[in-house]
Length: 597
Image (cartoon, rainbow, N blue to C red):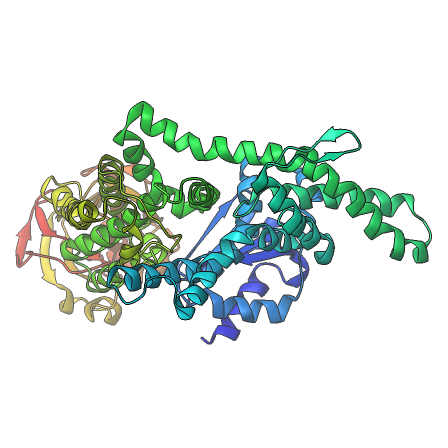
């Protein structure tokens, strides 16, 4: 399926263009706001080739694509065009913590490529200086240094531009609000400590370069002011001249006097919150955040950490939160590869190895949705590994001095400050320990008998004569198309559950059980007995019911069914993989081991 076909299918299965009010994308996900969530065909979307999974958070429908999300997003853009919706209106309907996180994600995500470029350039400059190739006075160095600072210094303008789309206000006016915070005369006055008053009110003098919230809240205020004057001024010609000047004339002074100072103080509190956690509980702060990180990434909540990381960078010159996200990717890689080692299913094993390598490169969603979601012990392994990485990160005071997407190639961003030599030793040690713990946990869980891939015994559900699968008079079963197993010619008319598990299928002539290790066991009564429409057969269990081994699941009139010309062979197969043992032929008693899987 091409990227265009995938985009068309996703939009169609979300209920069509008219059901999508807003859309953005991050590194691996398409994020949609829908007018009616019930119109989205979740199962069909998840089954699409190229879709790794779906998740819903805070009224946002997220489709996980992986590293090719940018290409799919371009095709979605061509289909939908500008579908931005006013978040002000949305918040009036539903204002929650998830709404805030969703808004921050929509505004900050488009800026991340600029941060990445700046961070990589800072690494280049660091290497040039460290190796003695440049001393900082060369034209090339100065030019590269400008590139490395642009995204951070002019961050208020970038935020204002994206906030304009989110809050549905004129982009030109929004950029003016962001640019006002960086106006050269104001910046000089702040640097020189020169006071500034407006109508007798003292303006708090702060530096707003590399900040998020002053511009974001300023544009939010602009959206209200603009809408207010739009209602007051009735003449369309007058609106062209009056709305811009009235909007900026009120918004920018209020931003300088109230909004920006409060936002700046709030950002400082946000940045100090993690410092407070470290000062209070030390490395256990990293352990807690690390343990929860896989779940945060799974649900998209990790995006809420980006503002903290950016504020840390602008306040301290480094971030201690981003390294925990770095170790998340290492943990996901270790857990996925470790799960691949113990997995018995060849397809799942290949997926685990492949997505583990992808996580190592910095994109963890494929491993999360293809491995962790399907195996709770793989997820727990990643959580434990990430907890260890977070603990070590804080214990060793590891910091990232450039805002880079965390992956194995961003390691140079840890080099900075006055502890480079220590970091060169402690960072590799922390990476190895994190990976080793994550890799080992799936193996430990298997040894303890907790893993999904632990073999379990499948008992004979009836007493009778065992026959090989190829001797069954039904090509679907004899060819192994439904899985590996055996047939049993029963001595009586009762079928018992061959293992503990949950009923997945409950029909008149067949029962499917999902065993505790994930294997799906099909117990099928007879050949073509579906034609009996339940006559002479009584199924004693229902779908989703929990059953115990030895519990009666089907009763049937053996003699009556055979008199009608039907074969009553009881067929038992594992539909999800291989079986072990089970070379038995001849008579077997109910409850005796038939095979393991």
